[in-house]
Length: 155
Image (cartoon, rainbow, N blue to C red; front, side, top):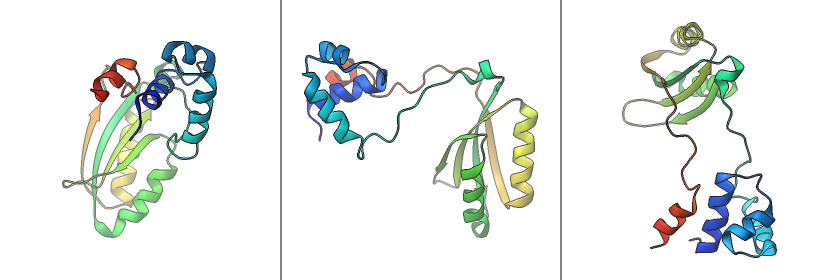
């Protein structure tokens, strides 16, 4: 279990990974050297990667879809490999409760989603699917990103 200082460091990283250690030290009252050492330790396993959250609509990708896929067992591994290399997919999860995969895809337009789904149905034995188009992003990548969260979880 992480202590309060460690949780504060992680919350600040989640909020802004580019923030300087000096500013983070001021905000958290944790010495810069401690923050530096903790982050180095986290990078060996806890922190998976540093990334940016991009507004894909500004790049012309106006369609985002969350897709549930159910596939015949004999096609599951082949489909998994196909999903892993597909550049339109942002996230792919193996799930339960009657479906095999949950997919978060980013496409230029709805037609591209339909082409993607047709390929899955024709080549990978998809037996069922549900498609949900994201209409508006209300909250994104916010979990564990504020000191309020840290204070809430410590109590």
